[in-house]
Image (cartoon, rainbow, N blue to C red):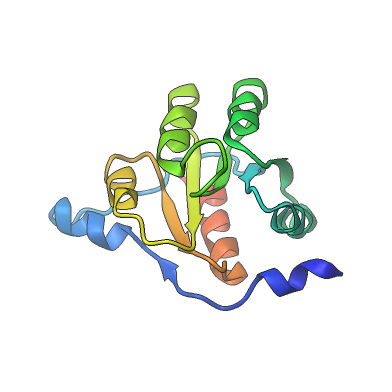
Length: 155
């Protein structure tokens, strides 16, 4: 199968550490959701298909979008619990897309993954727009742990 080459070990970025400094030690706890319905927003088609297959085999109901416009449409018209979103997309950056998705559904859990260091990601986390940020390439075990935490949380 072609998708194994896309993933290799990397470090997960936990912005909750930054958040705890800003909020005097209080960490945000995840809100409760079923966490079974995922939307993956990724402009690289092979990566999107690979993630859909991997997470589908883990029991998640996965929708995919290769651009922000489709992600917005799916969020407006489908029941979505968690969004896994690439930060750089062809039609809109992750900052604007995540804010738009949160306006559509305030209970949405959003994970961003990026290969770039974006200072505005700290703001997205501190404003409770984004829940987790991952470095690319994604380390699957870290993604699975985060998904499980938000899927089973009792916020």
